Image 1: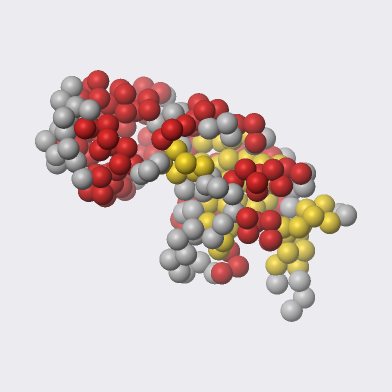
Image 2: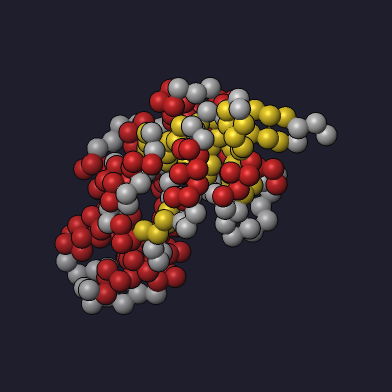
Length: 247
């Protein structure tokens, strides 16, 4: 079959689960923080409770199109309170929450995936515009600085800044404007099918699903990668620029 070569001008990345992840996990972080206040919890149970509460709320999309640091803080306050309700709560909850909420801006609570810096550096050397398109609150800017990732990207756009969460086309269209690229010149890489694959495809952006655990989901193999290094195999540099090669 003849190979199709498409010129690539920009690559967008999701943030959490794609570039970095909570370390060692949300459940472990919550459990360790609660222990300071004399509350012992099973990290795995906290992890499951957290994601159940997140899903019930519909994630950050439930914040609506207008947000603020205070509105986001109260949203997280309610979620964390629900997570610990089944454990009898946490003494001095306001103090506990203040420390926990702020701590997620610290680099120590996040692990950057091993191949990230190498891949970003190589794409930059190929002249590709790099952006972050993420469902995240207003703390993303501080976190990127603390992780020393801010200078690796030409721009970032979060759902809170945009007023729309993936898969809403609005956030992808704003990213295209910032990158000054057309959908057919752009790749978006993320770890969530509904948000990243469906959202990108809806506006004509070529999606890649990062599936590090290789659980064998239903996404076609040509749209699935297990490491960000595979992006470099999918796109190559030639005299006419960086191109995506597909069968």
